[in-house]
Amino acid sequence: AQKVTQAQTEISVVEKEDVTLDCVYETRDTTYYLFWYKQPPSGELVFLIRRNSFDEQNEISGRYSWNFQKSTSSFNFTITASQVVDSAVYFCALSEPYRYSGGGADGLTFGKGTHLIIQP
Amino acid sequence: DAEITQSPRHKITETGRQVTLACHQTWNHNNMFWYRQDLGHGLRLIHYSYGVQDTNKGEVSDGYSVSRSNTEDLPLTLESAASSQTSVYFCASSGQEGDWEQFFGPGTRLTVL
Image (cartoon, each protein chain N blue to C red):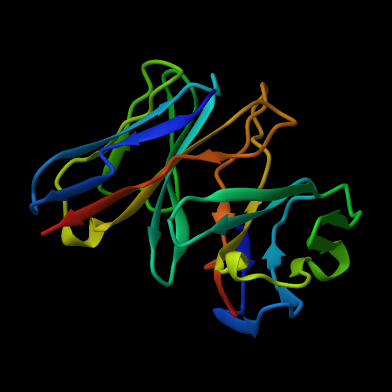
């Protein structure tokens, strides 16, 4: 069975600090997909990134970066120079590909989320 | 623009009543999903569908059912609502292989009294 662990329940930092959110996953498959979603106080879920298991390249998007390491089954997320608007709950999620012909992804297995608080 | 909508956004009902939450997407996605979000549990998969007439149980399917009669809609039915089903419900959809991003609806907050 697949599992996603976000050990940090809540993190509080002062604006402009860098912060890393940890994500550790478990899966029996060699092909899988990893995701990060942001849930701001307004409640919607905002997609941030998708990474497939064959692509271990790190990703940078503005102040956001992701470090994927298969050797440690981790997919960590770093925010550089954090801002108050980054305050949200962040979810890491895992999906294994649908095994029937025709494609389609299984539902996501989510971690319990990390509540990030950026203080001004 | 394509979107995914849920209705109602808020619902209060009583124990034992049947409740249906609607989910409608205009992405023309084959894959649709229902999740519930509870404090301390994150989001958990209830049911999912890979296409018309296809439905599958997720991690927490007891007490819920879905039906898929067209591509756009996947209504979620609580057969006999229980207080333990008080939660925020999210619907999501995704496209074909190579496009696994799941687009989420705005959520429905359901309270069962």
